Length: 262
Image 1 (spheres, rainbow, N blue to C red):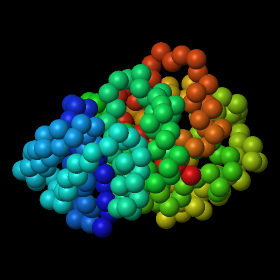
Image 2: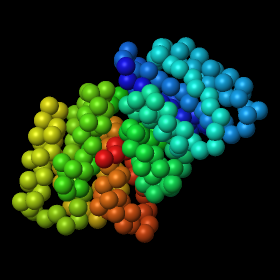
Image 3: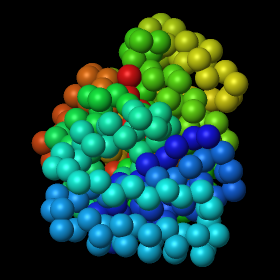
Image 4: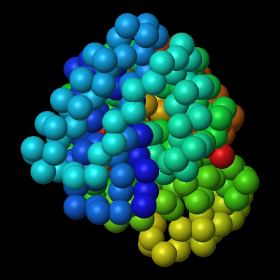
């Protein structure tokens, strides 16, 4: 049984993430959905439980999944509580919403997300506010092709690929790429090919300065439904944060990101 945790604050953003996740997991009887709310005022305990049960009833009535548990917990540190719950449940995935376009950058620099990454409990899937589930047929894995055996969270990514049978596209964005790949790139490509051999990955190398623009365009061109990134890969993070400003952030709030940690 694969446990999937969905933190709820009952905003439209978190409700959309819950509905997205429930449809995404529909037809997967070996998954167990946990709707989780942490309340900071003990007087809100009953309200928290009621809201969770109402959402559970909605999802059950839609028939998208029939294995849902509600957990309401008093606390003041969401990340610590989530990490503990994920560890206790041996969770395969945490699904979270994100509210503003400019917060895509905060996925990698915001304190809450980095704290979750530091705990290294399980992958975190971030659902844009207007995303509607239409199936996951194509998954892109962004890699910097540097020391891939040590920096690629193989087990976590394979678990996701097993939950969502899809075509795997491994993509690299590097403004220093020229006509042909270096020997180093070819060697790392061969390692990735072997690591994900059972998924028959396709490889793409994009010579552009703007990572966000490159991935956005790639996602549109290849009908990508989910982008996997490795935020603890420091050289990769530096590339993400290397832009002082970005006119148009990634994915136009339509393609979910999954952060899989080393």
